[in-house]
Amino acid sequence: MAKRGSYAKGIAKREEILERALEVIARSGMRGASVKEIADAVGLTAPGLLHYFESKEELFTAILRKRDEVDGLTFTLPDLDTADAAAVWEQATRAYIAVIRHNASVPGLVELFSRLAVDAADAAHPAHDYFLERSEQLHERFTRIAASAQRAGIITDAIPAESFARILHAASDGLQLQWLTDPTIDMAGAIADVFAAFAPARP
Image 1 (cartoon, helix red, strand yellow):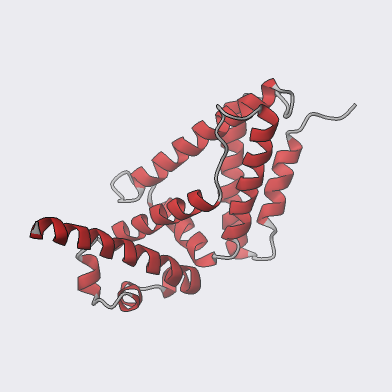
Image 2 (spheres, helix red, strand yellow; image 1 turned 180 degrees about the vertical axis):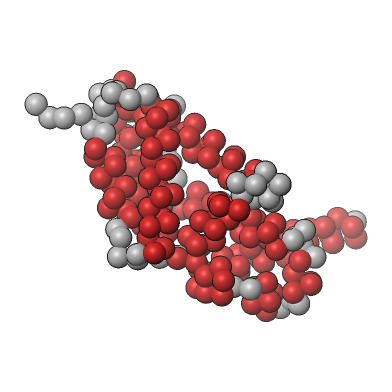
């Protein structure tokens, strides 16, 4: 029983670390949010913090997973099996644009995501599987949404739904990189334009 209680406390402490780390990085950025600063926020030493994670890179990867979990609860995508194509498309595009708009309010997390995305090209990096899984899930979900919208005539079928999903993903990640250099860029507005560009031309 003691071991089970200790394990539960460890899980709870790890969750507390991730929640506070989200706040610290959103406020201070990746470079400003050292392991020590995150540790101070939860009342631990830096070695004590890393007791819950295998490395600094694994910590940052877990922070991104936690961010996706929080965003998933706030910006929900529709269930394709319970709504018609028009409702699914409207809800999906609204949620996607809302996520992009929210990202503009947490530059530190955008910086963390973008920097780790480059490092994670190395298959040995702790974040490699995270980015691969995230990409596959996003691509699969929006391929299905786009295919449904194409069948209903909501967006053009001039390109495969799979290509639409890839273009959307590339536009989102690319805009974040541009925005880190030039914060005046309207990421949400540009993504809204991407969606509009695929709407069928009006007669």
